Length: 118
Image 1 (spheres, rainbow, N blue to C red):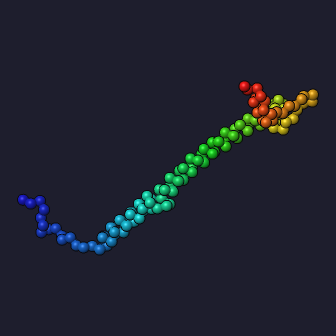
Image 2 (spheres, rainbow, N blue to C red):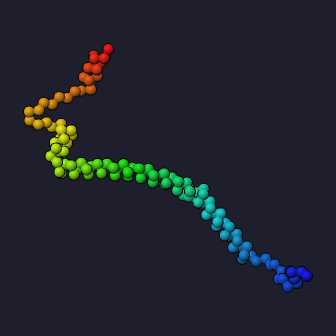
Image 3 (cartoon, rainbow, N blue to C red):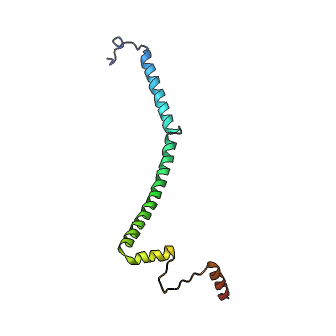
């Protein structure tokens, strides 16, 4: 008792459309894999863009931090006269009436420290 009856089976025929379709699909898959893994606009570009995104996120974090500090400084200036006075002294070198302002140059400080040290 044979499970397969060879007399009932149709003989395999060469179907050119099937083989052409298989060749086209294999060629398309090969081309797409090449484009993804090896082409300059594939995986290498993705890796490069990922690095650039990380750099930009770091820059963005630094700028956001700076903006928060500036907002705090703006609020302090809006609400406090002392903050305005401190800003005028540090940024613009302003002094109050009756105050004396002394500025020491680094050259003076260097010569002074050499004279004091043994």
